[in-house]
Amino acid sequence: MKKSIIKIVLLVLAIHIFSACDENIELNPETALDGAQGFKTRQDVDAALIGCYSAVQNGNYMGLRYFALADLYSDILAHTGTFPSFAQFANRQLLPDNAELTNMWQSIYIGINRANTVIQASAGVTDPAFNVNNAVAEARLLRAFHYFNLIRAFGGSAAGYNKGNGAGVPLVTKPTLAASDAVPVARNTEAEVWTAILDDINFAATNLLASNGTGRANKNVALALKARAHLYRGEWAEAEAAATQVIDSKAYTLVAGASFGDIFTKKNTSEAIWELQFDINNTNSIAFFYYPTTLGGRNEIASTNSLRDAHEANDARRPVNFTASPAGKTSKFTRVPGDDNVLLLRLAEMYLIRAEARANLGKLVESLADVNVIRTRAGLPASTAVTAEDLLAAIEKERRIEFAHEGHRWFDQRRLGKWNANGITQDFRALWPIPQREIDTSNKVIAQNTGY
Image (cartoon, rainbow, N blue to C red; front, top):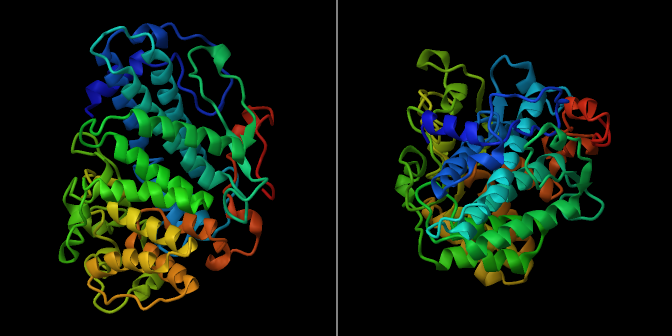
């Protein structure tokens, strides 16, 4: 995803990238092409899709902040730096004008707008060699991914997700191609957003190819995201079925326990279902934010002692999650120049999703087997959990350790109704606030989450 390609994408996309209606557009720029004019060939669409992935790579999104700040809000990361905006996450005292939230929200809606542009414009490409359904499915999968990330951070309720009367986010399904398109959109209900997410995922699962190339969404990516979505919704049979399809595809294998760190230090291993690609010309600042200044970083975040102490003896994941040198960091991100890839979906998650679904379905023997697949890989003895309650506790612990530094923990605490485990005493803080700028520039068409 080279910078030259991204420049092309920016040229052929919309007149103005939608940013959650964050400002009133008063001028019509004359140096940009109408989005509809920019898509004439399948090569145009593919370049635009690369631009869609570029949006995911943004440092305010999956290039660092979305998952790192979620871990900072939980018990995975500690704040060791100086950014006041990061300190608000560490203290669980977010304010609506927090710059990190504002930039994160904008970056995600930029991604949504790019996906919407591809979806709408693809229908106009008449090249018989162009697989329009695959292209649209790839864009819709990305759009579902964006809305899923919005709803789990800013939506739902203190009780979790899909509990009824949960808060949603503004649902925008058409591209912003002119100033008149950039009108404020009110928040939809949580149920409406989930419907849109699952519609996009199901379309993608049906129409995506088995492979679209390294780092690109494919059929198994759609199925894996489907498993995750149903897990959050507490739809156990659907979560089990989708996770099983990915596992049974035999397209992926777990990396050996002694080589657990290779999942992250080596790129695109056999365990990766969906891995966000970075290289020396297209970088992120993840390791830079972790590493101490003596090693070229800014020492802003570090592993917590409670994460260190949560590991059992001889757990192969401990030295990866809590490093000895540099002390208290992680070796999931090691490249200070910024070319670490980011794991968005991997096979271990499918086993633990299926284990949790099976435990809730009363399939205790099968659930235990899935848990032990992960424990065996970590070099640990088999779990002795017998009851559903014991299994669910074991699964929660495995998820905390297995996915440390990958942004799962806070959202697990939310969906399990355990958000107050981090010292939060006000239930409204289970949801992050909508950025104040979005409320102000929409003339309060976009409503704030209760309590902020």
